[in-house]
Image (cartoon, rainbow, N blue to C red; front, side):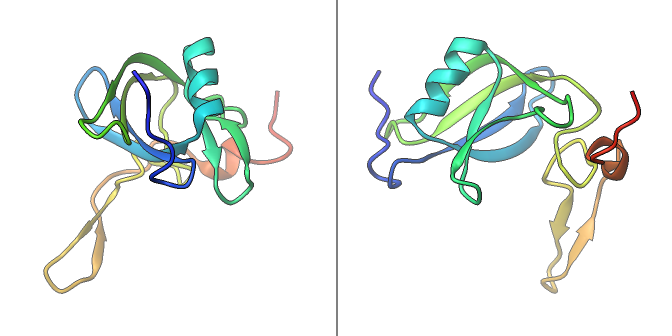
Length: 129
């Protein structure tokens, strides 16, 4: 199947979903190279828009995403990646999912989840070994 990277300027959204329970964990972006690297390694690799380079989820935290299944949408310009999430969370703010806030009717957001790990400990430059 040909993925249409041209519509998004070389990038496609990749929705990351927990294979066990269906929870949406995060949204990232992939280019052709990161998709190929994901296929090759079996672990999710994204293209970082802010750093303009590939990054493997979990390279600093150890919280990797093992691919269980990849699906493409009807327009071939978005992916759904079902994963086994290794570690207590996916979000760099310490939550299991990046979608830990709900927008209420007044437009304000409310945190609806508990932190599952300390980002300060996981992402510190001097992690204890």
